[in-house]
Length: 121
Image (cartoon, rainbow, N blue to C red; front, side, top):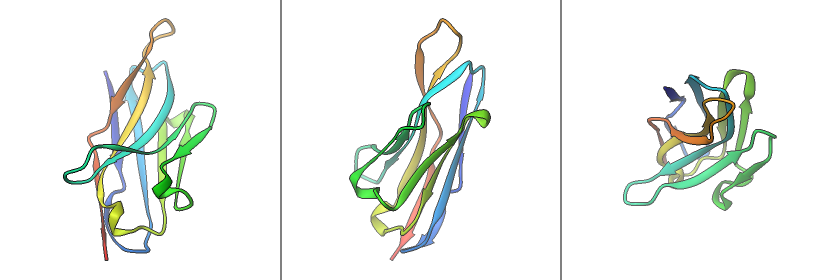
C-alpha cells in the first residue's frame, strides 16, 4: 500500500508565502511524475504544478513566477513553495504521484488527502 501525506497548509494573508510538503511511503519501487493539484469550492480540480523524475517542471499559467515545485527523490517527497499568494489561490491542495510498485509493474496514480490553503484579502 502507498500513502501520500501532505502538510504545510494554513491561513495566510494576501502577499504571504506557504510551503507545502508531500511524502510518499509504502511499497514503492520508484516514483515518476509528481504534482500538486487544487480544488476550490464549486470548481473542478486543476493542475497547479508538476515535476518529472528528471526534474522537468510545468506550471499553470495562474501560478507561474509565484510558485516553485521541487522534489527530493531520496525522501520520496515533493514540495510546493508558494509566494505572493492571492485570495484566488484559496483551495484544497492535493499531492499526486505516479508510483511503480515493482520493476515489472506500470505506474499508478496515488493521491494525498489534501491540505487546505486559505488566503485572506
